[in-house]
Length: 412
Image (tube, rainbow, N blue to C red; front, side):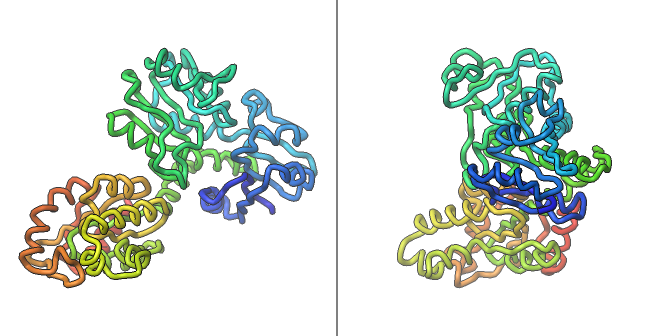
C-alpha cells in the first residue's frame, strides 16, 4: 500500500473515490482487525494513510511524532511515513470546521451538544471551542466523567442551540436510526452530522422536517481528504478544491430516482440515463419479482395488494441504501411516505409527468390494466407524485428527450 485508509469496517467508505479524484493516485481501502493494527504500523509499508473508526486514538502510541494540533485533540486520522518515521496529524479538524462554515452555523456564544465520545468527538470539541462556543456538553448511552446520559440531557439541557453527531448512529447499513429526539430541543438552530453515508441521514431529515438547518458529513469527508492530500503531496489545500471534490463526489454517489404512472417511460428513460451517467440501473419492480420468484399479477392474485406493498417497501428500503444508481420505481411507490423517505436519503426524485392521453394500459400491472383503471390511478396519484418529487419533468417527449432533460438538470 502506498496511500489508503485503514479501519475495522470499511464497506461503506467513499474515501477511495474521493482521493483518486483529488490526486490521481491509487488509494486502497484496508480493513484491519484490532490485534493487527500495531503490526501494520511496525511494518511501515506505506507512504500515507488515513485512519478511521475505531483507531484514531489507538494509533497514537505507535507513532514517532504527533502534530501539536492532533496532540491537543487526542486523535489522529492521517499518518505520513517520512524516511521510516511515522508522523500523525488530524485533518478532521479542518474538515469539520469547513463543514460548519459552509452551513453558516453560528457557534460563538452558543450552547452545543456533542453526541458520542470517540475520536471524532474530540475533534468536534476542538473545533467548537476554537469557534467560541459558550458551553460544550457530551452525551453517551453510558455515563462517564465527561459525558452525560440521554436522560440527563432531556431533563436539564433542552436549551442547547446546536447539536453535533459524532457517533456512527445512522450510518450505513443502519440508515433508519437516529441518535437523539430533536423535538426535545425548542431552541435548536442547527444540526451537524458527521455521518456521510447515507448522504442525507435520518437525523438530518428529521431536523429539516422541523425547520432546523442541518447537514450530513460528506462535505467534511471531502474537505478532510483534501487536507490529507496536502500532507501526502505538499500541494496546497484550497476551499475551491474542497468545493470541487465535494460536487464531483456527490454527483457520483447520488441516486437518480424516477417516479410516475405505469407506462410513463420510467424503465426506458432510466436505462438511457444509466448510459449517460455511467450509473447502474435498477428497476424496483424487477428486483421485487426476482426476490419473490413470481410476477406481479400473480402476487396480487394470490397474496393481495397489501402483501405486494409491503414487499415493495422492503425492496425500496434496501435499494435506497445503495449509492450511484438510476432507480426506476413502480407506479405506486410514492403511496407510502416511508418509501419516499427512503428514496430521498441518497438521491433526488424526478417525476416523469406524462399526460393522461399518452398513458397506455398494461396487462402486467393489475391496477392499470384498463383505460378506466389508468384514469382512476392518475387522478388518485397525480398530486402525490408532484408533492414527492424534487423535480418535475415533461414526460411527453421521446425517451431520449426525457432522459436528456433529466440529465441536464442532474449536471447542474
